[in-house]
Image (cartoon, rainbow, N blue to C red; front, top):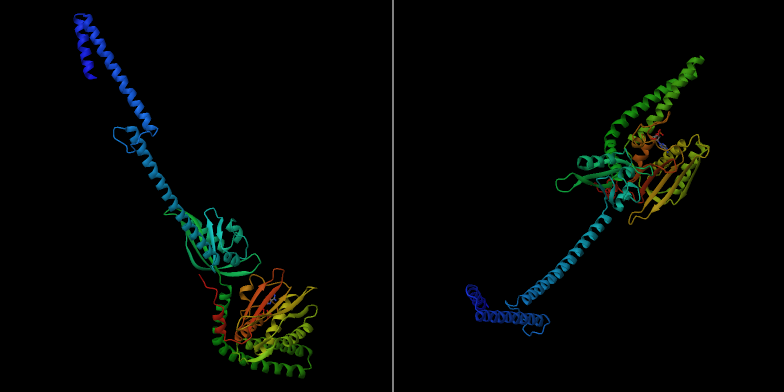
Length: 462
Ligand code: ADP
């Protein structure tokens, strides 16, 4: 081709210098030949390419000179590789998805079955997740997707702790708070709150672990009280005894003055001294019951007749209040006289709380709980009186705590002491429909108080 062009160039230069028809003809012939050859070569290539493109060629391996085939083959190779990689990615994705689902199921099962309550609050203050134990501890159903301050109460201590954790990222470990649940009951909660952070960023939520320590706290208080009483009891019982002797002497002289004096004013004064000594003697007698170490006999006590007799006694004193017993009462091991004292004190308090009501009612209810080897007897004394005020609730069982003008404040302290000595438990609550409820639980077989505590240590503080 280049030869044809150079000869053509030569002919053209010659013809420009001296125009010669022969030379021009030769030049034209060479040019035509070159063009014809060029067309032939192009047509041949086009045919060959299209044959190969339609697969008519039997040579499958790409060759360097056949660039289109080479390109196609390379592309197909790349596509095949990409498909394989896509499949591998799909497999890995499936495995990861299964693993994630498994982990999610596992964590869901753990949170659902854990004994402690779990609350997760997001940065906007919405409860993102809550387990059934949290609903039970807080006494609220359906906690999820509600504002925590609404559910817990705007001004309660627990709300304030969560708020501090969300705003300042503060951690609270093993705090104890008294929390009032919607039914009106106050529970002692063990609380651990920690913030959720992503990296070093600000707080994006709070995790709150809750457990109900009410029973455990009550037991600890009772054990503490029992220990203190043992020491105090010996000492104060001796002093109270001296008091009683002195009171008996004062009372004796006052009686003498009253009977021997003819002066109306003097016998009137003597009568007042007698009245006061009677009051003080009553207080000292009650205190002795409380302070003296109790010696409890271990005889079987049939509760049904004991309760009926005690209620008869109260009914005659508290007219206008209906007092009755219902439910199942079995046999407990203990001291009949002391257990009668318990029923008397609780039912009397119930009747006094109903004073002024025309429909006053005290119900003593019995229930036998089959607790495996040691069934327990539950005795509930419920009234529809004024109920226990929030101020009185924490002090109920403290000696000398009273809200009554003529009360000694020893009735419930004595009750608690007797029940503890019988290896039992006593709790006080307000009933949602009004009035107070005192719940006594006694083991059918009298266990030692320390044993009773061990049995109830299932509420673990977190
Ligand atoms: P007292 O009866 O001499 O006051 P208690 O120890 O029996 O002593 O009771 C202490 C306090 O507990 C009472 O003053 C009263 O405030 C409260 N209380 C006891 N029982 C009830 C009840 N059923 N309802 C309301 N409050 C009660």
